[in-house]
Image (cartoon, rainbow, N blue to C red; front, side, top):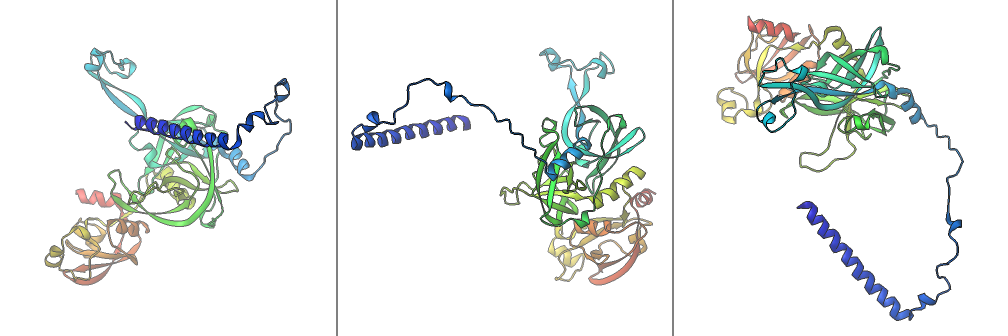
Amino acid sequence: MANKSLIKVAVTALVAGLIGGGVAYGGINYFQNNNIATSSTSVPTGSNKSGSTSTTNVKVNVSSQATKVFENNKAAVVSVINLQKKSSSSGWSGILGGDDSSGSDSSSSSDSSSSKLEEYSEGSGLIYKKSGDAAYIVTNNHVVSGSSAIRVIMSDGTKLSAKIVGTDSVTDLAVLKINSSKVTKTASFGNSDSIKVGETALAIGSPMGSNYATTLTQGIISAKKRTVATTNTSGQTTGYATVIQTDTAINSGNSGGPLFNIAGQVIGINSMKLASDNSGTSVEGMGFAIPSNEVVKIINELVQKGEVVRPALGVATYDLSNISSSDQKSVLKLPTSVTKGVVIMKTYSGSPAKAAGLTKYDVITELGGKKVTSLATLRSALYAHSVNDTVTVKYYHNGKLKTANMKLTETTKTLTKQSN
């Protein structure tokens, strides 16, 4: 319907144009008495050979800093393909002449179903280190999440298998490993704390997928430290991230690719863009990158440990804003002035919270000097610290504000104690 309506609109516009032109032409004829036909500027009737043209042989030597950054780093940027298994049945598809996907992927020719790998999503990645027969790539966690296998496409089209070294959903970063025999270039990280608003920013990646691989876009740094909410696959806010904001064109497929400064240093890993606000208003020129200083810290830990070890409180929690005002008063016994915080629903044996004296129905309002207004802000305040740090927590117990110190332990250790 939309296409047909468009055709009607186009035809209507064309007819209106012809009618308007006819009216104007008739008016000219009326007032000028057909003088155009007898004018001395009529079209010549001689030979057309002199009307040919050609290109000039003047060579333009374009050499900008942006082109140098691109040429020096394009071989370090790759496309990352997320391959996932697709199950297919030999029932109706076989009867109706569907593809036979059994082959070597099927465990038995008599199986009623089989699976094969197919491209699920695409992103970008950056080769940042080459060591012996291995090369390491940083990309976004969401680019490789749920994958059954990973394929990397080099800038020259070479396809390589990749293995996941480690992932971190909190910062949306992942490290991959490939064979280094085809790697000719690695990129280096700059200091993201030294960037300035207004300086040039360059992105190289595969916007809209590998069909547009090794695309260069240019913009500026719009903000150095912008706080944005991070969400999980269900769309729930899980925390907050401090990112670089840029108007450099970033599209689907650019995720995991590098953001360079004009010196060719990687100052961030592109992670997201804002396409519309909460009201649905379209937004242009708002992309975000994980700062390089944060990237280096996380990927080094992923290479060393395969995961990022973070501190834990050892509690089950609930957002205070989701509890009715009557329960806030009768059950939690909170003052009417306290409307935001995190409610402890359970403290686990041997946990930091348990050791500090916190119990069920206590409401945390501050941790480590940072206000706690929701589960997301609690996580951000907690993850600003390291394992074995001692932090101050403020909370309400039976309506009274209390303060306690707690020594943070590893998430894995807390989970182990929960199961015992």
